[in-house]
Length: 81
Image 1 (cartoon, rainbow, N blue to C red):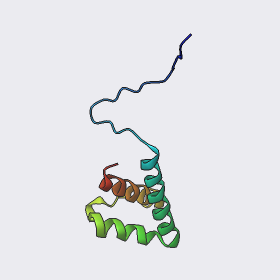
Image 2 (cartoon, rainbow, N blue to C red):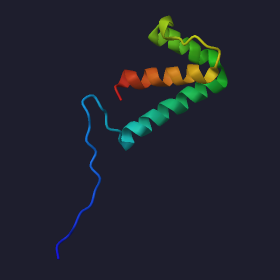
Image 3 (cartoon, rainbow, N blue to C red):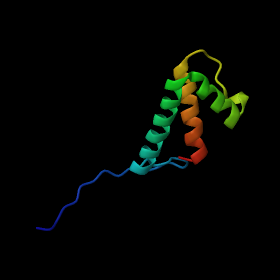
């Protein structure tokens, strides 16, 4: 009897980006850097968003996690992953 291979196939839709370990490692590194920046002072994150991406990208809230998530998503989008 021959070999039988079973695997799951993922059919991507137009515009989908497949995740891989390299992209996940880059995202984790960005998240670690931003969290370390926020641990020093949340104003570092706020100034990074305003200086690098423009004041219009600042979220209208007082929640520190929202500022952190916004900066992470902007940096990841900047890399195209």
